[in-house]
Amino acid sequence: MGRITLDKVSKRFGDVEVIPPLDLTIEDGEFTVFVGPSGCGKSTLLRLIAGLEDTTSGQIRIDSQDATHVPPAKRGLAMVFQSYALYPHMSVRKNIAFPMKMAGVPEDEQKRRIEAAANALNLTDYLDRRPGQLSGGQRQRVAIGRAIVREPSAFLFDEPLSNLDAALRVGMRLEISELHERLKTTMIYVTHDQVEAMTMADKIVVLQAGVIEQVGSPLELYHEPRNKFVAGFIGSPK
Ligand code: ADP
Ligand code: MG
Image 1: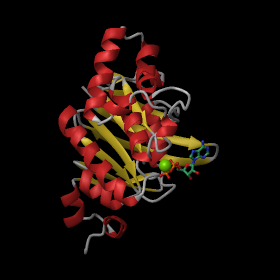
Image 2: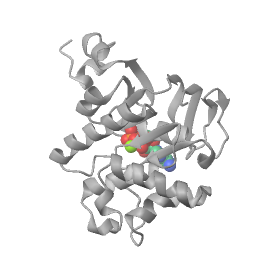
Image 3: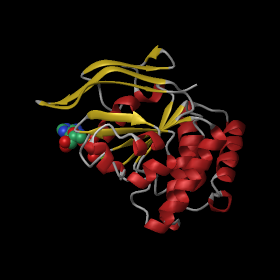
Image 4: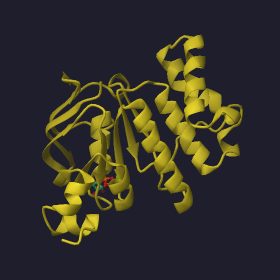
C-alpha cells in the first residue's frame, strides 16, 4: 500500500514560509509528478514526505497512519536522488545490498531481491563493477535498484535524470514508466521538465512559490489549465 495524505502541511525556513499550508492526496499506485520552476518548493515537499525535513505544521499520513513525526527509515518509502549517492568503494551488488543489510534482511532473501532488481534494470552483467566503472544511466539504475530491494510502499524521485544527457534521459524515462507499470507501486517524481511531467504522470501537481496551482491529469491540465501560469508552464495553447 502507498496512499499518502498531506493535511495542512507547511514548511518555514527561518522567517520564510517556503510551503504555505497545503492539502494533497496521492492515491496508492499512482504516478504523481510535482512540477514547477526552480525554487518553487518541489524538493522541500518531497523531503517533508520522506521525513528528511520536519513539518512546521500539519499532518502527513501514510496508509492512514500518522507519519508526521516518524523517522525517515521507518516510513517505508525509498528516495532516489539526482546525484545517485552510491558508495564508490563498493561493488554494484554491495551498493544494492546495503539497505537490506541495514534492515537485517536474511542473506538468501537479499540475493533473491538483488537478482530480481538487476534483471528488471539490465544490471546483471554489472553487479561486480564499481560505480566509477559505469555510465551515468547505469549509475542511476543502481540507485533505483537500491530503492527497489527495500520493497517500499512508495518511491520518491527528485529530478533523477537531470544529470543525464538528453538522449539517455528519454530512455530512462521509459524505463521508470515501465517499472511503474510492472510494480504498480506509488511513485512521486519531482521535475522542472514539462515534457517529463506530461509523458510520465498519471497526475500532475503544478507548484508555484510553494502553492499548488492545479492538480490534474496531463490532459486535464492541457485542455483546462486553471490559470495563465499553468497554461504557460504546461505549454497549453489556452
Ligand atoms: P525546488 O526543488 O523546487 O527547486 P526547493 O524545495 O529546493 O525548490 O526550495 C524551495 C525554497 O526553499 C527555495 O527558496 C530555497 O532557497 C529554500 N530552501 C530550501 N531548503 C532550504 C534550507 N535548508 N534552508 C533555507 N532555505 C531553504
Ligand atoms: Mg529541487
